[in-house]
Length: 240
Ligand SMILES: [Zn+2]
Image (cartoon, rainbow, N blue to C red; front, side, top):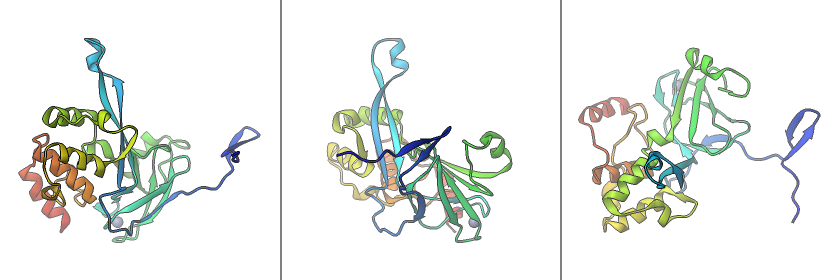
C-alpha cells in the first residue's frame, strides 16, 4: 500500500507534512514495569578488536516513561511522565507541581537515550549553541545509560556471572522487564526480592520506575554494583 510521504520539499526547506504525535504527559498507568524502557543489544568494534576480531556488546536505549527533574526547585517532580514523541528534538513542556515553573523537555530526535529538562527555554541544538546555554541555563539531563546502569559493560558482567547473553536471547528491541525475567530464569531466582528496592544512581532522582529498581536490585544481587551506605542516608533526605 502506498502511504503519503512524511517529508516534502518546500523551497529550501524540508517540511514534515503529516501530523504525528509529540509531547509529554503525566503517566497515569499503574504498571511501572512493562513498556517503561526498551533496549537493543548490538555488536560494535571495541577494545578487543585491537588484539583479535571479537566485537563488544553495546546497548541502545529508548525511554518511554521517565522521571522529570525541576531545576527551579532542585527536586524531582512527583510521579512519572510518558514520552509521546518529539519534533526536531522538541518534546513538550510540563508545569512543575511544586513551584509551577515551566520545564521544557528536549531529546535527541531519534531514540530517547537522553532527555534534557530545562527551566527558561527549550534546549534546542538546531537553533542555538547549547554548550553556551548549559553554562547559563538550568538544565538537568537524563542520561539513561548511566542513570540506569544499562550499557555493554554491565551486560558483559551479567554474562560472566550468569551465562546470559543479550544478543543470543533477544533479537532487536526488547522490553527491559522481559530481559530481567530471562536473567532470573537463568539463575533460578524469583524477581520479587528485587522489586521496589531503593537503589539509585543519582540521589536527586530517588524515585525510579519499578522496573529500574528491580534492575538495580538484580545487579546488586549479582555483585555487579554495590549498595552504598552513604547514599542510603542521602536517599532519605531527598525523599522527605
Ligand atoms: Zn519546581
